[in-house]
Amino acid sequence: MAHTLLLLIIAFVTLEFILSSVLSWLNTRWMTHPVPPELEGLYDEEKYRRQQNYMRTNKRVSLIARCVSFALTLVILGFGLLGWLDNQCKSWSDVPILQVILFLVVYNLFNTVIALPFSYYSTFVIEERFGFNRTTHKTFWLDTVKSFIVSTVLSAVLLGVVYWLYQTFGQQFWIWATLVIAVFIVFFSMFYSNLIVPLFNKQTPLPEGELRDAITGAIKDFGSRFKDIYIIDGSKHSTKANAYFTGFGPKKRIVLYDTLQDQMTNDEIVAVLAHEFGHYKHRDTFKNMFISIAMVAVNLFIFSLLVSNPDLPAALGGTAPSFILALVAFSMLLSPIDILLSPIGNAISRRAEYRADAFAAEHGHGEALISGLKKLAAHALSNLTPHPLVVWYSYSHPTLAQRIRAIRSPRAGMGAR
Image (cartoon, rainbow, N blue to C red):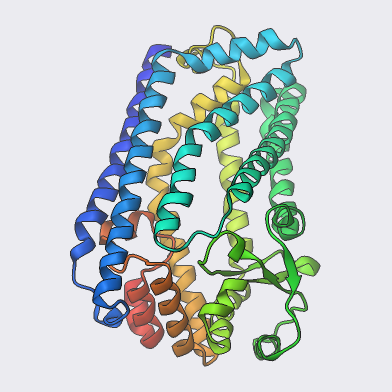
């Protein structure tokens, strides 16, 4: 049975690799497709060639990274290296919970090291070549170390608690684990901007002036109250711009990238925030949290039925019962479900984006939003002609052309949904 599970895992890993490669190939082949009429003139001839070159360069590097990851995964599975790592962790400590955490730390470190060369090349070669990078080598390495420490510590704490619940409550651990993870999700949704962002970026209150007056005036028109409006120094990393809402209740705040002010007018910035208010008004954050927690509960329940099955750790080369190996094997066996659910989740997300755009348009910010989105796309050298199948499967947002059509013609937007 363990051998059959191993073959299934390898088959699923291969399926994911083939699917992602096919979607990437389709997108590359579709690059020369005619630009939608709504986007004509967004790039001049020279800049459009630059955009095409940027996309091709990223696709090549992504393909190499994907192939390396796939090959290493096959080697790890074929030689049972995860089982070997589990045995090593057990030899380093006699405390079961420490064995689980040690496995996680080494596993995370391995994945970080493998991804590092591609991240470095993307930042200091590709992004540098096309004028986006503002990250110094010092910042890059510090952020890499901090990201590893933060993600590993948080994962270790959460996994350690879940494992302790498993030891304490047995097969019923999934109920308590769901509650713990739900609290974790809600807590970091509220405090992410206060606790995590400052480790990587500086946030300062938006100073008094025309932009703040325009934003606060729009907030009143929306029937909402937001007193915390911050500027984040995104320019220390990239010239690309963004804006988002974070937190809820007393911890909700608006965050603007400083690069946004360099690329857009005040009206366009307000329009982008009107879109974000659309998400807030439709409670999209709460809906997403509910869906995430529900999925966690379902997955944990199924896992609780299989965690004691010795074939799961054995499939990865384990020689003894192992909670962490069973968890890794289970997550790999879930990949076909993830493949099936991905287009459904993205379709729901795109519908939410249409609703948020409609909210902005209903409050008189439609044309300013279109203008701002065009500027963001042009500056970021965005792909204007993604393949329809790629959009359907993997896009969480509608394409720029679809958004423009929907903003200008709500009925057309409903059809695109």
